[in-house]
Image (tube, rainbow, N blue to C red):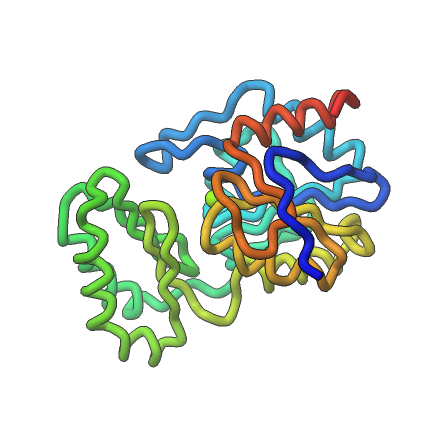
Length: 250
Ligand SMILES: [Mg+2]
């Protein structure tokens, strides 16, 4: 029998057996018009540090952003993390795995999509490329149609198109947030713990789908999502819960 989704509630947490895994944009942080403009509320890094201590370090970001961007956002905090939708995995402070960069000629084949409007922000993430169009949302059908015409190229290069909130990314098909999370969960201090994952966007659905393998729990932010047993309204709700948890009042 399917369990009903619990709205505006959070799961109980056993710090000895839980691994905390959080998407960042739209889950912990409010989405901003351009990716560089997001605000990290001052109390959040302290809450994350406190939580990390309570679960023996089993706390990681699971983001489409690169590790470098995550580190800049949360500086001086450096956490284990999955970056670039699984293209990068940081197991500990210094132990980083990176997928090989996309070949230059592959990037060149798609880069021209950004010429559709000067307000599209092109981002080269190394192992993938992204087009941010929050400043010009009406351009989305144009971008998707252009990609449709490049289906054969995408197939040939083993690439897939990810559609997020005002972002389209092109990355190799062979990995995603879920494949990376499986790898992270095989290493200490994550090994043997139950993942508690929160996410808000389509790319997080892959992770929600594999949580049962590890007896994990999913929290969706902003809307109900398949595989998430809990659903809360806003990143602010997540942040205040984490701070309550950390202080022992949650
Ligand atoms: Mg997100």
